Image 1: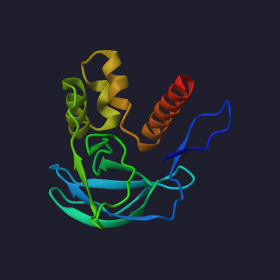
Image 2 (image 1 turned 90 degrees about the vertical axis):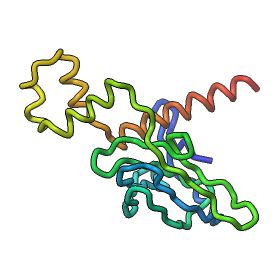
Image 3 (image 1 turned 135 degrees about the horizontal axis):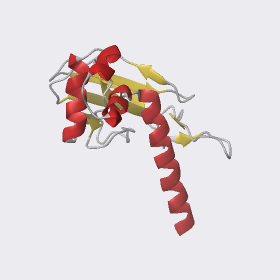
Length: 167
């Protein structure tokens, strides 16, 4: 139910849909990291909610068509939600809140190494490391929710265009 609010020729944008149909959920942090829940508002802007400590949960009221992302609070690394990058609530079944399981993705060895180096080395010192030039660029290309929203919007737009052409 996410909406593409772009005009033709512009960059696609995801935003929450204002359905006014309430849904109860429980955000369950199944990771060992502190999680930052992020709601994508009706204009497509990310809105941070209070963090979830490792192994904790929180009952939330949200709505059908609302878009949620989850990030590691300290590094802004994207996390998985019910094995996907984005969570959009479905109607509650039998009045029970939906369980929203937040977990770490499986990182490539390269990405995990970049995370560790970022945690140990100040950004201004990256270029002092004796590594391949392309790794400087990878280190400087830090995780960013706005960048991920653009990537997800393009993927959603391409997916819906592909399904439109099949009908």
